[in-house]
Image: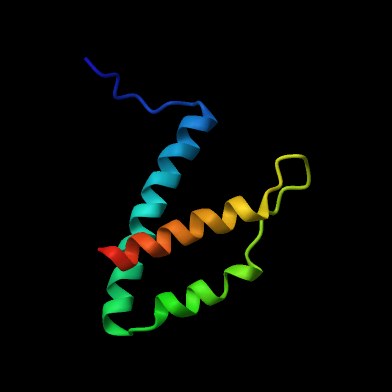
Length: 78
């Protein structure tokens, strides 16, 4: 049986929030792109301005851009 209590672990909470946010954003992108073709092209063109806001050794602007690019590619292919 699965425990239905809410975890207090911030990593679990962050993971769940990330999954939910990605789903909502993905569906929003698909919907708006269907009504306004070119949205994904515009977002893709802006990726050069996207970066990681970390101030330590984990900072990786390219990794953040790669995640955004995968989201755009997924929205295009669906």
